[in-house]
Length: 197
Image (tube, rainbow, N blue to C red):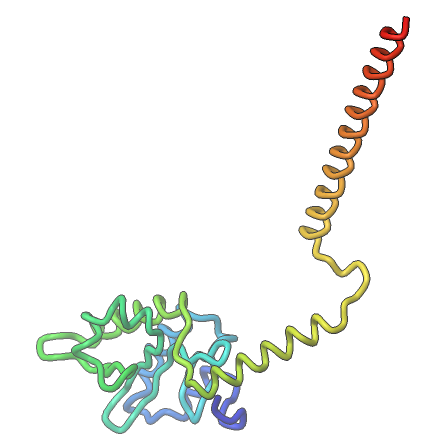
């Protein structure tokens, strides 16, 4: 994961104020697309551009570069599902140039980017091997900490009701067995008494 100091909260107005005037309109439209696909709380500013990172996985975002705006689609599932449509705009593994091809309008490209953002919002993103190891280690620590300090009556309601129903059926079962055993013992003693006569 990149250093936390490179991340800051996403504030649309503050972000747009940092964008050059000639790119501000397109940056505003890209903000609209990102905000329509993700909660504003999911969006952060990383090194000056809006990005969505969940559970240490880079999912989507965009940046205004010197060559023009670029959308980031970091969801492998989205790239697999929409790869054919995105391919003509792709540069690198996850960069989508927000630049119309000959005979296209910017609206067509933005519509495609918007669909990619929505698709990406349903899935995970890309994570480096180093970050995956860190995340797995953090999860193991959290799980061992949670397991090391059991608290009385901390079972979830579902677990409690399951335990209760298992105990109840075990009790019913043992009661049934014991009454069956009593009945068969009673029959045997009655049979013995009749045989003696």
